Length: 59
Image (cartoon, rainbow, N blue to C red; front, side, top):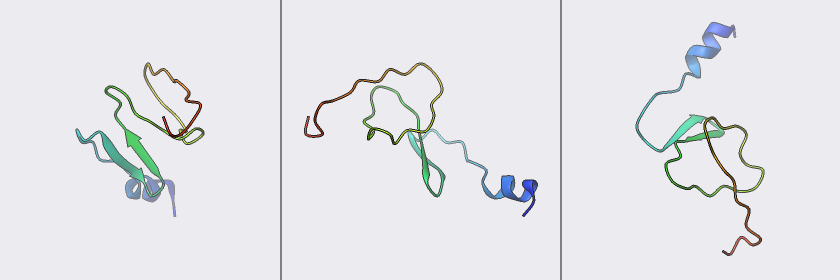
């Protein structure tokens, strides 16, 4: 597989949906407010985000 074939098969689609499947294992989330994520599950972000930890998963 060459780079052009890979890029064409893995191109993302732009939508207004807050949750969008980036590829078979990555979810793209448009954050407008708050989102909960499991510690260590986020791989990257762009923009101005702040993170607040919780002591328990039950909160």
